[in-house]
Image (tube, rainbow, N blue to C red; front, top):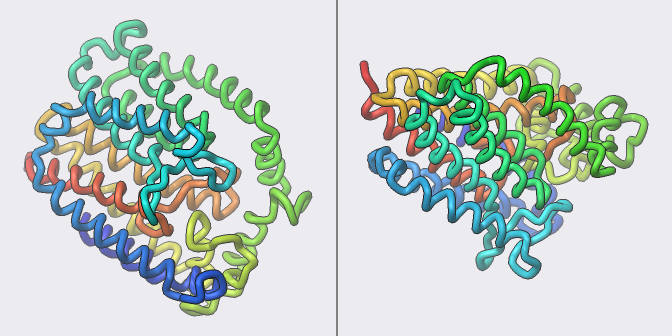
Length: 355
């Protein structure tokens, strides 16, 4: 697990510099601007990971309610003008000095911890629609609804899918998920129809060349990056799309620049590192000493794996644009430090795994 994380972090820092050097030099007169900050975030995140890995996982059970309450209060605070900051059309950030935090990122981990406590305590009731399944859904969709007020569909989808995996593995009936799926399709369609920009994203996904300078711009430029990369890539630092074609390539679309410079082999290598992390995370969950730690390990592993899968799918044009980062690689303080902190919990669970 540490090998996969170290590999992804190393590739991430190198690619953040490569992808952002032109833009950073133009905007901040410092080509290392984003790379230096990413290195700082990685250092803080690694320190937090090592520290948290020494904290017994049972402590998270004890403070689960308090953590979730703090997360909900932050989700409310970010909606207040003057506190929340608007970026990319979403009020998702709270500024703290020169830095900012994204409450929805912390909510993902807070909800995973609380849901692991709830499901492990109520496991014998999870097959019951009223006593186990619906209360779990109420909690998950309350958090989802608060995140959608920002709005941040990408983070909300990652949160819901991760929690659904936890509920399913805890023993919920498949028939309940079938009914939920039918309702979910209708609700998802309503969410799309309620916001014109989401409809445009769907039509841009189906045919990005219909609006090449508008909603289809990002995915077209992403595919223009991936295509020329071929098998071996154009070489590290030789991307053409980072020259102001692909908007802010160091964030959500960093995988496109990686594929352009390092080719299919580089992209496949990154995906193999994610698969290695997923495999080790599942092993930790299967060997965990109790139900709570097992669900906790599964939730953290699922959160990172699902987010990576969605991001890479967006960049390669398999699903509509959702606006979420690639774990360990994309530039961003909240996302990187929170992800590494989550891994710290996972490492602590692995300390007590059954051989």
